[in-house]
Image 1 (cartoon, rainbow, N blue to C red):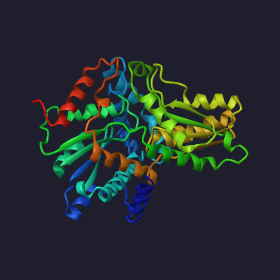
Image 2: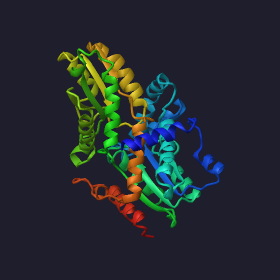
Image 3: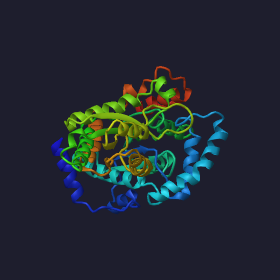
Image 4: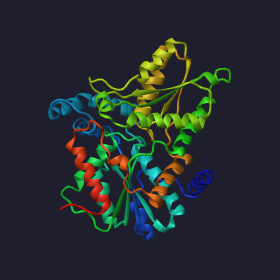
Length: 396
């Protein structure tokens, strides 16, 4: 794996950094080569401008895979309208929009460059971005993939830890796209829906934490409290059997093993939405409580996010570090950067995809297994669709 990290660093250093608006399709046209293998990168996405915020919130609040509300067709739009101005202000405070698309394109470009070096037999590789709530949408990605005539398509979740509300929602969107559309017969599909335990994912977080620990005075460094923070989940989903909480915990355990320091650590949860009970303890409450216990030196680690966005740049940096921690009397709090374009992270992405392309499985039994208390017909039909899609046998 060390050799892989060196390879990624070398590949990246040889290529100029491209702007976020750079078109991968344009690069294919310039080289005259059609992609042989497509990597579809799934994520929630975020509004690039404040003008996109209202529609972004509306799509989230009306998506029952993400959140369940009573009378959702009416309550969802009402909540979206009510929150638009507040959320627009938050995006304005971090520069006017989300950098998720920029980072996803950067990661995708670096990933495919590495794969071209590692796996020439499946090259050229091209990445496609498939967001749920802002462009480019699922339909955009798969329409372009079909136009490009790729022979192999790897659907690759950028949520390392699986949840029905995140990766599951993207899976349902893909199934919806092909519901009334002919499946391309010349494309062989496969799926990577989770990779929480990958050792290089743990290593990149460990490296990020180590960098931040050295910002503390040596006299307190070993006692700095490491708070791993992840997006919370409604307790209803946890009780149903969603695997997300234990997969996040697995990433935390692997990271602490790779880090090998004596520091105490805990897993806490952020970004609760709505009145229903969610997974606790909440990150801001934990900061306050630990400050009362005398823990005045803290590191926040966004363990479930692979790139910067509103919940790191605003919720963690501004609301928790600049406001909550200071009011609670915390003497020093540092926030670990998300993986972004760290060479170790790109090596993790490349290793996950390369191993998948060489060894499979094309579709995991873990994905096909529903939660023990799942009663969603949509979930059942979506999993059946993927079983058919990847086997190449599609029911008419």
